[in-house]
Image (cartoon, rainbow, N blue to C red):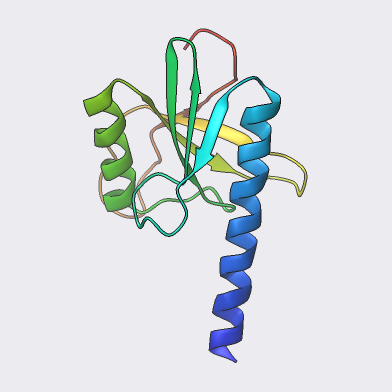
Length: 119
């Protein structure tokens, strides 16, 4: 039963990554998934002058270690660290990670990110 539940969660996560990928492509980005990479990035989206490093979490939560790894990676390469969540089945909402995250259970230092607005 647990294996089946894990597989279902994995499939839902994969579907959400594809939904995010489509969202970026529909907005003029070159976007690519990094499936199975075990990296802090699920999707990389590129547009002239902008590189987005995206972690997709349907529930919008990311533990401090994963948060900080994504934040540091984007900072190192001049990209924008984003967390994508799904408040409704057909919606991809984006959050820019504003700073490193402290201990578990703390506030997520983020701000909503709107595509094509100066960030």
